[in-house]
Length: 522
Image 1: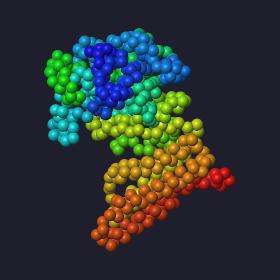
Image 2: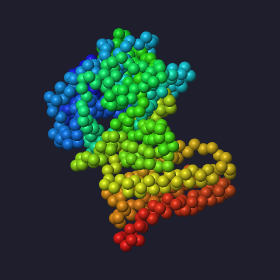
Image 3: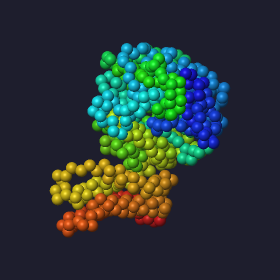
Image 4: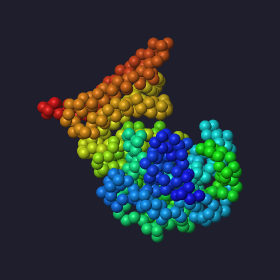
């Protein structure tokens, strides 16, 4: 299958219809988005296409980037660029084949479902623990879906046992893409272009085996020191990491409907082979992911942020959009996010953030969010105010947990409680007020305008009210509560209110709201 010329990529167009296109048709202004049946495939498809554009028609500088944004990509240039990498975009039994080991793998066949990150593993099946994602639900896969399943696995590759390497960014990396806020009429290629970076030295054919690792013998990692870095590969391999040694079986196929997309195909794939000790990556900074470095151990390097239980909440937003530092870590946004800050006269943009929350090889949940993309002329001042607001919310949440335990137990210090649901609810319920605060702070991070100071006060009042309402909802709901327990609960509520009012971070936030007034500028 020639991915460049065969229609295999599912998309939606201006009319709302779904169809399949070849990569050569990506520049069609009528194509609005990819249309996969799985959310992780959808995110992976965007990364696939961004990598494709980055490796073929990346601009040489920001002026050239702006020129493409305004005028588009020349059709003939696009065709020539795709033809140059045609060998890397072939999928099938003939080697080299897209994202598969160029060497035959001497291992037994297993189900094609192994390409899916959330497919139940061998131990799960043995113990009959496949309660939510059942076995035998993805036993037949059309080649079109298999392309994206393979890419999704390689780019998110979790830990999988001895020698089964994680992705170039680690298992279940967080991806952050710049997307338009209003995108109904913006063509797909233009949305993708928001995540393209200037490339001063475009890759040459001699570089392709270092960019697309399936074009050469796999650099296996049985021995120590066999690590692939940007120095001994090509930086663009970041988009095409291949930590898993996989070979799909194209000899044993069947006709029928694909278990993923439902379409009929004459040669559904049923089996695959895998082998450990694939490519081991280190020292990469992927352009589509934010990174964190521990201040205690800078020598440990930068680590890509990962999916986490409960997904993202607004205490994470600052580190995803602006570089920052706290007591423990320094963070940097993805390169594409940093590039967006310097690009003017673009439509309003936000961040599409997504990741698998992984527990080693076990996929617990897929999370995705759209969060504000902060672009401000005074990032340091903005960050200082927002950090105080987030710290106040975090301190308030801690007080809530303490006083809930006091309301529930006679010996609260000895009680062990899982507050994960309360924590998620707290951040979700106070998020709308936080978004309103951001809208006021982005154009006026010095808090010089009365409206900004009013927004700060409103944020603090909303936080205070939400805190008490959550306590009452959790602890004061039993109308038949015995008098002694009710008294304990009321005391806990009073203590929560008193302790919140005494918080240092609350005084600091309110001081920001009054600062200009005291200086006579209100």
